[in-house]
Amino acid sequence: MTVIDIPGSKSVTARALFLAAAAEGTTTLQRPLVSDDTEGFAEGLTALGYAVRRETDAWHIEGRPAGPGADTADVYCRDGATTARFLPALAAAGHGTYRFDASAQMRRRPLGPLSTALRTLGVDLRHGVKDGHHPLDVHARGVKGGALTLDAGQSSQYLTALLMLGPLTAEGLDITVTDLVSEPYVEITLAMMRGFGAEITREDGREGRTYRVAPTGYRARTYGIEPDASTASYFFAAAALEPGRSVTVPGLGTGALQGDLGFVDVLRRMGADVEITEAGTTVRSTGTLRGLTVNMRDISDTMPTLAAIAPFADGPVRIEDVANTRVKECDRLDACAENLRRLGITVETGPDWIEIHPGTPTGPVEIATHGDHRIVMSFAVTALRTPGITFDDPGCVKKTFPDFHRVFHRYAHTA
Image (cartoon, rainbow, N blue to C red):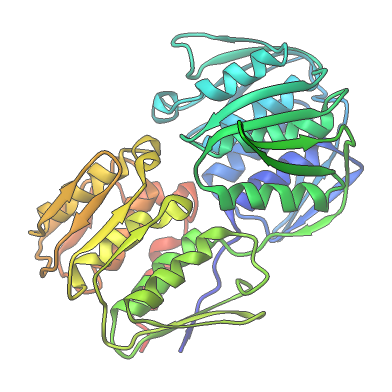
């Protein structure tokens, strides 16, 4: 059995940074993820006037419930979607003028539903080049609160940004959601908000689901970051793929916040042996991978992981309801299809689905990563059974797991 220590969750770290910055007092985050995305988030907080002190295994953030300490700031969000979507909402609760910009990749990713929602709440928000995209200026003077309707069918991050803003408003927020993708990520948000002292209720009605967020503010605390379930998926998939192998990820078990741990249930359906305890999760190969049809709407970040091992199944693997993966760091449906075809695999795609037929991937092939960390890490699993796979941009893993190649190489060469 191989034990893999996975870095902290990107999703949990980003939310914790927001909540810590908004809380009354100083919060200590234990074992936060250190990557391009999270460092960019922390750098953004510093630009906005929050005090962030980083140690090796802990980050300390002095909260400012009244909003950013700076009257003006230029914030560069790098490639980070959580940075680019969460920080403008945090800044809106303060008073000042804040300019946000991002990489070319992030500029292409949509922001419109969040921009519209913030404007509905009276936030003076102006896009600099293209409406609904970065760059943008926020002329903040606090947020009164109120009711709004949101379509979160493209990204749950829009809803998360507004939910986390709610306790900082004067009167609270009522958010009615007409469509929602990746709902488990919203459950992470709600659990963490409550852990920092927020009060949220939820009602399902004819018009959709309504979240009612009270104007409680947040309280600082010490908060441990659990391992990243999306990152763990590559090691779980590797274990399921290779006969005689098993992988245990400690700290990611029955109490985990992250819905992406549900990826192991997909592996179980395909024939892998899966054990989840309070202490962690173990996946063992049974020597069989069965084809299946699976809806991955709620765990769509792990879609490329499944696509990368799908050719080794004994029947077609059809992944459905993942339209939102087309507006991630790249169009992941097309990227997976493109690279699998390069490897000689028969693939069909539609607006929100991909079907991958059994076959033997053959190299040498250079994987077109499109600058997307998840494409690299997913096809690294394929490479375990396919000599000659290389990547045109292997370094883009720095976004979430800078040490991925060394750790995965060590796994691959551990008996």
